Length: 428
Image 1: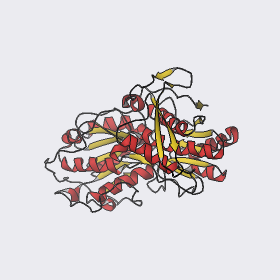
Image 2: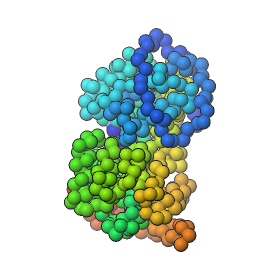
Image 3: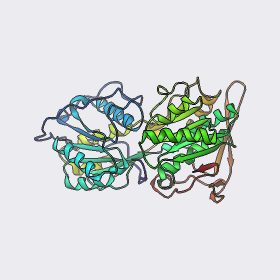
Image 4: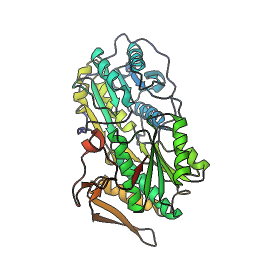
């Protein structure tokens, strides 16, 4: 569902002028249910439908239910429906969905793709990393359909691309909220429910970024990681969160897993939490501080527009997208930390997060560098960011980056060579 990714540069401005063609002979389908629009950047007025767009069909394969109210599938579904509405498409009649598709079952994934293809999908989005091989195979079987795979690394130069982003930037911001809360509570222990850790660069870099963010606010913060070896088992997510509280007396629970269960457990135990994928404050209003979130519609609007431009000639899709990998972060509005829950957060957390967000968005600093951050906060809440050249070490004592060195490239943080935890992370 989320893993290694080719860190190629995407030209966000799409070329205009490829003629759109109608979808010939697409059979009718049962309208898909839709969820409320995501709280993400969106155009205020729907675009006029280009020629042929009334026949255009978007296909999507989800790992859990399209009716989810929080988490990974929820945020993707909201991103797709929001993007479609912004482009003048109707999700009720033009969105085809096969949901609850286990990403460990290649046969089920292939069957879902066949279903969407037979229903007339012009583009098919697969949101889970485990869909990768089936998507690659079926892109060859259906050359007239455009395929777009979330978080993967396989692609071709015609009708199959990948998409992901710098979520570690948002995790650093969430880590700040966690670290400041530990200072307020006088408890340095933070728990982290992780689907995986060192196996995948994405999960590993997320843990590291969160820990570095927490340590920028509280240098003594320790992040205890419980790895559950699956993306979406709610029972295991709940058990892991409870064990982190019971065993290590963690006062904040973060997560890289799909549901809001760790946040619910935090609330039940009168501790605090940082969610993932979507804002989980509604699920745990007394506990949730903030979440590292995705504004998936930023990508989906780009991809669907490109697919409409290429309708009738799928071989132009990757060219229209500017390459076979989309990769963006805070600066593009693709990732962020959700609205801070001021009722739960420590004083001045918002001010510190805003200052660091601006620093990252400007390109002046990024997460994995030989420059660490700390903060001075004046009595009136103004934040001074202090940058200090410092070696970065892993939790085995080996130096990763020399003092003052440049940023770890995205290939390492996402594609796959980051396979260590930073100092202050204790993985069980």
